[in-house]
Length: 266
Image (cartoon, rainbow, N blue to C red; front, side):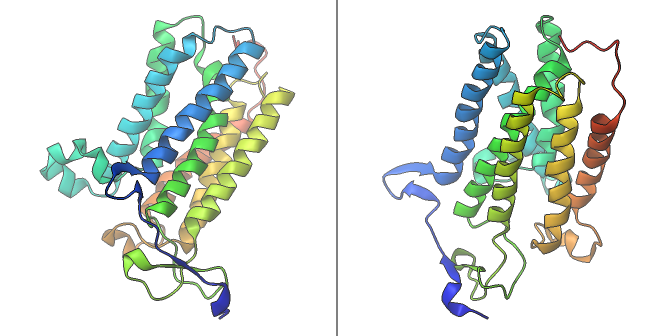
């Protein structure tokens, strides 16, 4: 083992400890919304849409993200505890968010938005929204790194991280960095696809690419991550992998299905 390359990781989750209770995770989480809004505003302007419409859309997506991610964690990973203590679900600040829950609720809130804004179609919005969701996913994983959470399994590779805040004395895979790097790469790929516009003529195709890449990678990375909850210890596939399989299957269908000439992407 190349001990000299090992990273001893122990940052304080708070940016200014003891001064302001602002955490790196919260800052990076909100940065995803801020940067995402600016990128979507550019999309709206270049495609002759009203950028003012983004204000309401941001509210719907924000609610879908936070509520979905929180409910996803509570119901997928710790249902017995949270169903016995339902008021604990409201304590989002104590941590516990699951991307699979957000992936379920965001389309639902988006469908509600479209019903109230008939000038937009569901597919038109979501095929552009996934570009910035990939960027936000990378920023959130950096927040997980600053919290020393969602860590990897033990490794003998020279770039292993010793998460001292967890009491570790051995290196682990910095799985948060692996995921962040892949999600940023996915963002650049999707952004380039949007610029080219070749997939935008097929409603849902961009969403399909996003689902296959993000949740396909999520399925694979789980093999080198530590279990998040105790009940995963005896599972061949953990909860994150089981939840990723439907997303990848749906993504493949959306990506590869034949174009429908009658479909409208207005």
